[in-house]
Length: 471
Image (cartoon, rainbow, N blue to C red; front, side):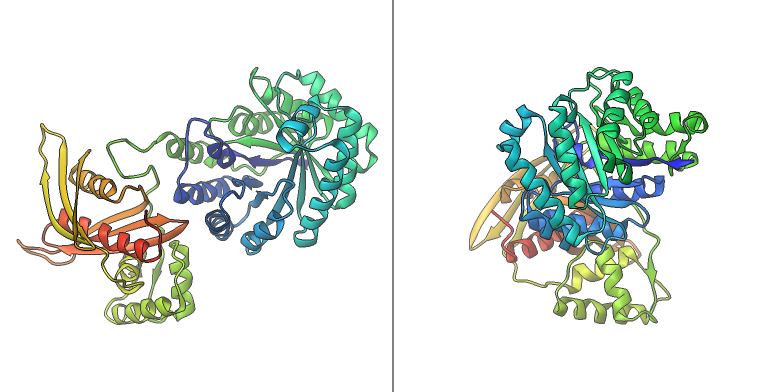
């Protein structure tokens, strides 16, 4: 039987604001879940902020083992090189050249005339193929375009090196029989189409996308653009179920792991539906234990690979400091886990002057009142005050700091653990903030765990400020 590639567009939809947003860390975790699910292609968000988005693509490429990671480059001539530098280390990279081919979208979205657009499709696909062996051409709004122009655009893309061609039904009004006839017409008119993989993307404004997907398979399409969550298009879950149940009659199968499908899709849905509370600085996200551990026998390259896997991008000098600190701890312990490695990075890497210093803090909390925090920080000899109302004392404290700084940094992770025993036990907190795509961790120690958390946040914040990442 033929294999139908299931491509997932959930991350792309989050960039477009379809009822949910995903943090940097959540996108990496979602890619891991989709990879476990057996999705053939994971489509990431377009590159709008080169530094941050390139780091995200690189992180996803490193995390994904089996799926293809696809990055859209549009028709902007500057993007293929940027995207490829970020994607080059992925096991299965793909560059996507997407261009609107209907008259309305061509003029008002791309601002191009037909002949100019054909030239740009040719140039962009050739540029991508020179970098990457897997190049997809996406004909946006193809079902409302002039048939002759769609055919010309597809021929141009194939001649330039595209090995996957996707046509989009953006309006979503096609009936299944019409979709089948549309694709059959393309096959009849474009002989070269039989030598590449034909993909389909359908809008589901009239709840026809899943039915059109089945019709597309019957017409010869072998890649479907779906989404695992909240997508007005082809449903990944429904498509996998349909092909699992009727794949023998259709002569196709997918690589979706059906025994794990429900559990993994529920995890993705939870991640997408858990929004950030207005009364909490914590971004929605997944708290996970990677199960990774190191020993005293591990060399610097292995330790730095683990550090990179946690999301850090350290300088050579900081890498040496972290390895030296790791070696001292590993000599006394059998294993060093991910949380301990986080604490090592927080305490050893990027030690900077304290721009913000804690002057005082007052916390009010109880079972019948909302938690409040009144913080005073010192900066350049000035005392700055902030008041936070949160879901708990640490929530309130972090919100008060955000109020003082005037900016919300993505809170990537937060850890608390005891480091001594007894009545006056010392508590340690590690806070990981993300700024400009980079991860900055801070460590705080105190007999007061709230105080330790505040110190850890300020420690991480000072590192961001030192790098010029504050307002």
